[in-house]
Length: 143
Image 1 (cartoon, helix red, strand yellow):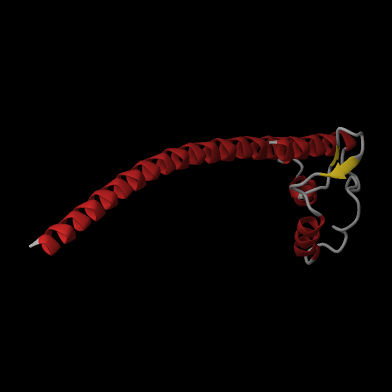
Image 2: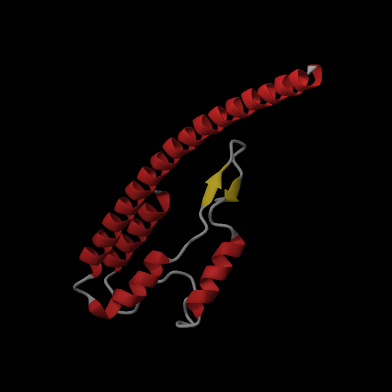
């Protein structure tokens, strides 16, 4: 009888510990769900901003169909931007690593052998339009 009471006490302690652990898991789960919903809302806002910038691009270039594809490639190209450290030295931006840009450029190079060249205004394209496309690209990358 004494052995059964010891076993029952041990099992009750285990049951209490398991219930405590379950309650903690439920709390952690609800916190994760809240963070997830916050991140999903943030993603939705970013997508809206990106759509807005894409619409700006389409409105800017839309009536010049002959340059649309070339300017779209320039607009979507990822670039390495230089940022200054506190010491005044310049480094490449973390999100635009060299391997990323090389892999993305190689994917785009298959259709256009001149894509690897530096960004240049397409022949017979308005230079002001080209500069606005570059500004939109910077705006897209800044967000």
